[in-house]
Image (cartoon, rainbow, N blue to C red; front, side):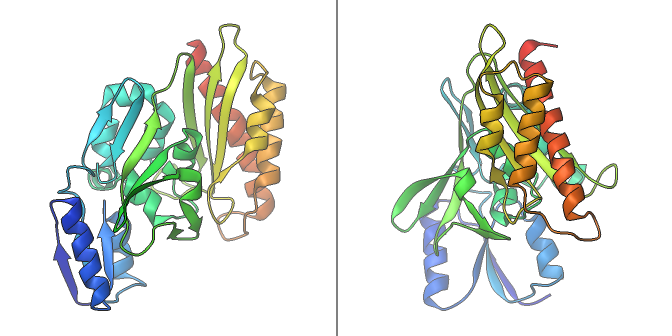
Length: 292
């Protein structure tokens, strides 16, 4: 372990000032939302001195609002707290399933969706689920606030779109309309406590006749960043989300994937698995809407 300074500001302005002062001194500052990935990195490959800026005392990063038209999830709210919220789980069951996959029960008492997103791992479970739900990132910076679609937030392996002096306040999601739901699935070699070999999030809207009128499909762990797969969504829209449509959506996910081969899976295996996950997640989202 190296030498570290720790600060826990209580306002957005104070946080921005800490980041600005560190930059002016030529020192490194690293924002902490959950900290579970950061602590592992500090004990391993990244021991460089830094100022750790803890966001958990900010009202904006700890706020959860379920409005009539919109949901706001603060970047520093731990996954365990989110998962215990029955109303939030009813709105976005797939997203909450993804949050429940981050580490152990103990880790979920600290880890956050915002931290998982900012860490920008290709295998981050909540990222495809957020993309499927068309989440918007609310970012604070020296020039005020700006918003970034979540599919544009991760720009590379452990790289995000935050500029110097910026940090993630939270995430905005539209309140789901009637006959709308989502699902997220991943494949791992072990039964638990592992990272995804492949993952897929699907969100669907069906009309009263059971025909899909809107869809979003995202895949993870099969490319440098999680991907929004528009061709998979197109394969589902206008269909009853039957086996034929799900197979076409899965094929589109395979075509969009650009995975690597490593000890956990080959390129060919990951491309095949992501199609299976798309079909299964799509069927789960459909059945949730239909009440099956």
